Structure formats: C-alpha cells, structure tokens
Image (tube, rainbow, N blue to C red):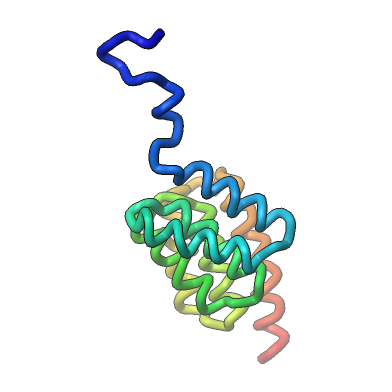
Length: 142
C-alpha cells in the first residue's frame, strides 16, 4: 500500500491519458495509418496545448504524409513550447530545404548550432547530411 502522503502509483501513471494517447498515435504512425494518427494528435493538441510532444509527433506524421506546410506549423508550435529539441529543429530545417525556403532552413540550422556548438548530437549529423544533399541539389540548379 502506498504511504498516505503519496497517491497510489496505479492512479498517477497517466492521469490525463496523454501518454496513452501519444502511444496510440505513435502506433498508428508506425502502422502507416497516418489519418488515424492525425485524428488522435489533433485531439491531443486541443487537450494539452502546452505539451510539445503531440505537436512534434503531429509534425512527423504530416511530414510523412507529404503535408509539408501543415508539418511546419506543427513543428513550429513544438519549438515554441520546447526550443531545445534538436530533432525538431532538424525536421524544420529539412522541411524548409525540401520546400526550397533557404532562409528559414538556415534559421533552424543556426538554432541547432547554438544548442550543439561542437556538432556532437546525432541530430547534428542528420543536419550535415541534409546540407550536403540539398546544397548539391541547389548548386545543380544554378
């Protein structure tokens, strides 16, 4: 039995249901059921508008679904709530590179560099790869 000054852990694991719903959305995403994942995540962002995680996952799902502008909106909200997530910064940079919006891509890559000046985080490796890939593409376009 839990001490009287602490609530029973069974009832405090996920009192709001957010963790459970994030897992449900992630499972839909992993299964390729993107519309179901979006539906769950849109409900979650209404339920918990100050939690960056549903916005981040929504960005990933929308990105995978090819809805780049909507993905940018979701990821940008995630960054507003948690500006120190390097993976979200890289995802935003990648989206802007895909959309050929170089100033915006550079802005997020600069934010990543400020977080990781030695470029040691795995997200920084992804950023280097993206730059090499897209800069070659842009160089061929000129």
